[in-house]
Length: 67
Image (tube, helix red, strand yellow):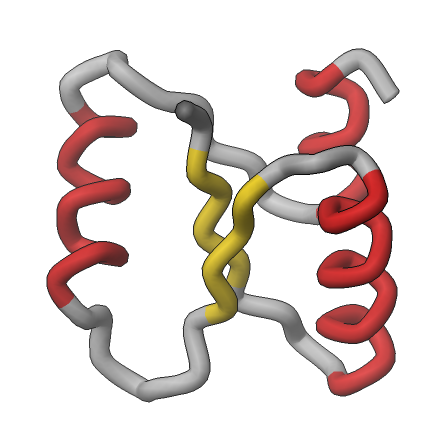
């Protein structure tokens, strides 16, 4: 299963990404706290070990997902 960890910049971006990913049946987690929790740290570690993909913004994420 693929999990996407999101740290949106605005409330509108959070709502848009959450709705879109839900429609695509992709599990997502929204980072709300200033410091990363366990799941976020794990996802960051996976990306650094080449087990995941890091995206800077929604456009880059959609491109990597083929949307």
